[in-house]
Image 1 (cartoon, rainbow, N blue to C red):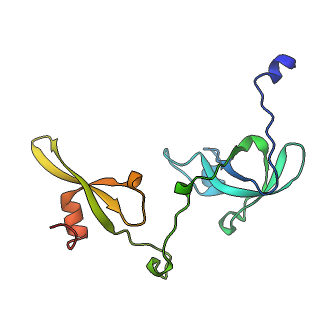
Image 2 (cartoon, rainbow, N blue to C red):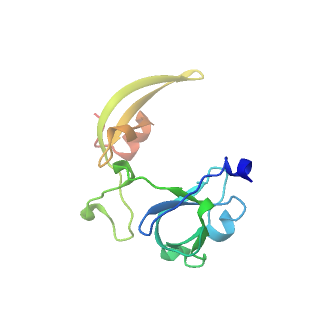
Image 3 (spheres, helix red, strand yellow):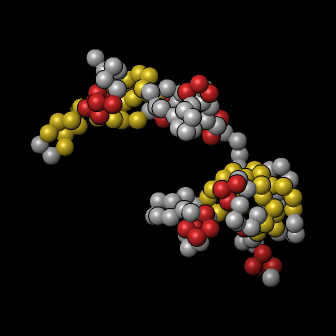
Length: 153
């Protein structure tokens, strides 16, 4: 037993801690509505409400997961550490009635021509409004011109 315990780690959480919950690929579709090869392995973060046993905790689950039992074994958790990029802050006047949000380009950071087979396609690196520079994306100049005609010169 002492040899087997060397590869085990004791994990403990306190009420109020935030954790990610592991989603099993087999049960993900049935319980959490998540499917596909690129589905997330962990969902959350969720707050721990109370410790139920030696190795199980009760989580505060959102209403969409009300059909899932809210007590889980500690092996299904991954600790959550706060990071400012995890928090999305939107101005309330930009959120529509159906709770959707319109992305608007703010600046062009870079331009690049890429050769695809026998064509040269111009790409632009777009900085999106209310997003940090690390989340800038490469888009085709044509798609930006059609979606946001007022933006490109």
